[in-house]
Image (cartoon, rainbow, N blue to C red; front, side, top):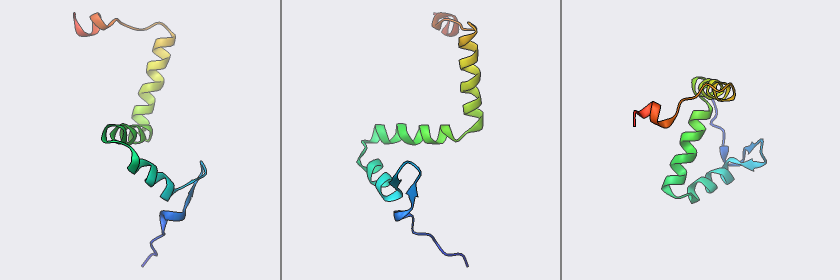
Length: 73
């Protein structure tokens, strides 16, 4: 059987403990908390990160369409 590690004192590379991070997240309002979690999950998705890289390249190279072209208004 493996030991369960107490994460409350594990230091995260940015100088915060897991306990500090959890405390900060708990203080966020619902909308901000949801935004943070969605962004954390997105940032760990290789497909999502690849799509951002591709979109930035397209933008830089001028391959864009207007809002009206996209939504037909």
